[in-house]
Amino acid sequence: MDLTELLKAILGQSTAQNNMVMQNVRLPRVVTAVVCGTGLAITGAVLQSVLKNPLAASSTLGVSQGAAFGAAFAIIVFGAGAQGVSAASSVTYHPLLISLFAFLGGMVASVVVLFLSRFRKITPESMVLCGVALSAMFTGATTLLQYFADDVQVATVVFWTFGDLGRTGWKEIQIIAFVTLLMLLYSFFNRWKYNALESGEETALSLGINVTSFRVTNMVLCALTASVIVSFIGIINFIGLVAPHVCRRILGNNYVYLLPASALSGAFLLLVGDLVARQTIPPIILPIGAITSFLGAPLFLYLLFKGGASRGSR
Image 1: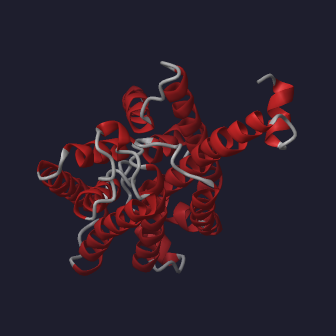
Image 2: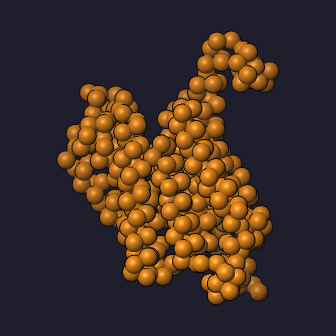
């Protein structure tokens, strides 16, 4: 489609085929990338602030791996992905049931981390280590489930963990957008508290901030947002980790600017990842989770080494 036909198709004024492709395939995919990229980046920026750890993100706290276990449990135990007779038909599963169990799995991981932080009084910095342990545990549990599954179920689990922006329709997008908007508004209205935490817990306490309560509230909201996103589109790594770091390199640690910049950066990175996934070997669409990991890991390493070199030169 040329630009004129594209604009007409967005407005529903083109041919029936163009309208259908644009409004039911292309546009939902683009909106999903924007909304999910925004949500993952915001949760990453907030978690890095309240946990005082630059490695904090939903993927490093075990939320994504917990969601993968929940999805595998639904597919293998409840037969949500065992309708077909071959790997090619493994995509004909019950997406809502898988999304529900993936959400519950992500929240279980979050509750465990919150329990350890609230009642065992582990340090915020140690929560990422707890997340690493939980990730290993959920990955092992998912592997055990796959060991007892048939070929179609294993293919469905693997396909789900790849990540796919094409799974969502407008109803799913509305759910994700609603949760992401709540997280975005909450974080924006508390932007000065994040700045206070950047100066240390003592400074935040002297300004009247209940640091423990504020930290727990933010972790719950971040876990909810990440779990909803991952439950619908699968595991998307490095967006929540890289986007805030990119913006910090440019804008610094002022959350007045860092939060909106991270949101835009996350949306842009996931859109670029989807573009690479669709255009590398057309018409094959590569798994978006693999693309974000493949592109995000070198970028994150570059930011770390460049930051270390800058501090060393001073």
